[in-house]
Image 1 (cartoon, rainbow, N blue to C red):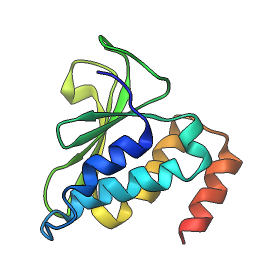
Image 2 (cartoon, rainbow, N blue to C red):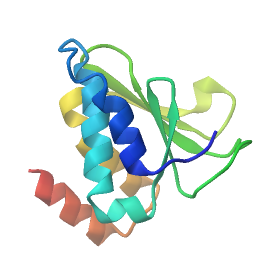
Image 3 (tube, rainbow, N blue to C red):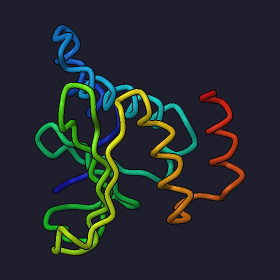
Image 4 (cartoon, rainbow, N blue to C red):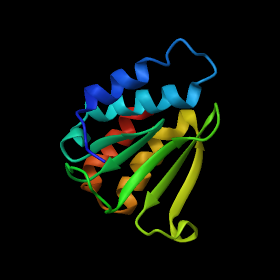
Length: 129
């Protein structure tokens, strides 16, 4: 696993734009774009994992086995958020949301784990409404 610049991740998801049944994958692209255009880009580092998007708190090189947030398109319309901080899948925090709710779920996750100051997250959440 290696982190990559946000624009590389966005370009990777752009390849699926012509496929209308890939709403959740396109939502991952849109989420990556929003992150890259926000102050979150300074503290979140993406790593592609098949169709999934892994988000870490620091740049890493292979091998890396620390905690990460994995976003997965589990259907055409839904994204699963999974915080991988243990190898026991049953103990991992996870939520499934409609593709249109990905941004607000990300903001809630970042707030719950205090990855960013609350006032920054609040202002980003208000912009989304």
